[in-house]
Image (cartoon, rainbow, N blue to C red; front, top):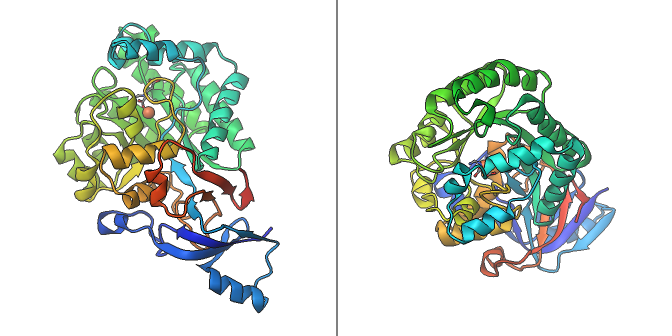
Length: 416
Ligand code: NIG
Ligand code: FE
């Protein structure tokens, strides 16, 4: 079915130049067309102004099946949420209550809560429960404008449960029209069974778990939590080398709790993305820029666990590729709403609205290998579009804390 959307007050295309990602000056531009129009079926077929569209309708060079008046509102590419943990079981609101009474995220983890609490619940859950929970959060994310997702395993920490999580994600891919990439995060924490022998678990990850994940084609990426109290640089490098030998690409939880030089490792091994980076050093910002590793910033996590925000200004100004994502998970950031993340990025990380929109669309798409099909509104890309209730894209940031998304098209089909 071919649809014409016209009278778009602000058509934020993000790019019209086929850019794969944006850095430097380019990230300050969102390639806006005023009074725009788009013709699309599964893919975007034509982009222009409403008056051009009217001419085409009049001379019958286009005969769309459906014509929609956007009433002067804003259209953007769907958001790309490139870092989530939305498949899990259980609920940690009790922990959150403890944190509100003064306990820190790390204290809770040290007392047996945190990731380990979700591991216990996830090991006890059926694949159907994991699928249902993940599907509910994914559908909710779409309502807030997300049209591509990355989802990680990592609440199993044993072969059986990690596979159960990855298979639940595979089932989600089968029923949802949005694009989904899967990341194996068996190195999210150390399982309690190996609390006194971490290296043994690293060996199991490399020799037993990763080969099965790769052979069954259950993940495109491998991730590890490289941080103080979690995986060391040496352990992570061993895991990543094994993963790369099996054809997986690398994304990383890097320097979230302390500067452990994890971002340096990400650059050295050619990781696609280094995420969090609350404590990244200046030296490693330059290394990420030079290696082309995406710096994925997750301001929802800094907000939720009351940590200092990543230095987005410095990372952008030094020329690294910056993406934004939710990190949606039951412990350190429980939101699937990318509009919240946009709001936090401009207010608390001092990004501009244009930088934030580029980071949440094209640059995040690049980090998932989706740049040629998503992340901007360009002819030939998938028609993953959102129509908001605002007449300007600045209003998305200005009027905060509400859902501005009216309609969502995924591959040209109306989803919301
Ligand atoms: O990205 N940093 C590690 N993992 C998650 C937290 C997971 C959890 O608390 O359940 C994160 O912040
Ligand atoms: Fe995370």
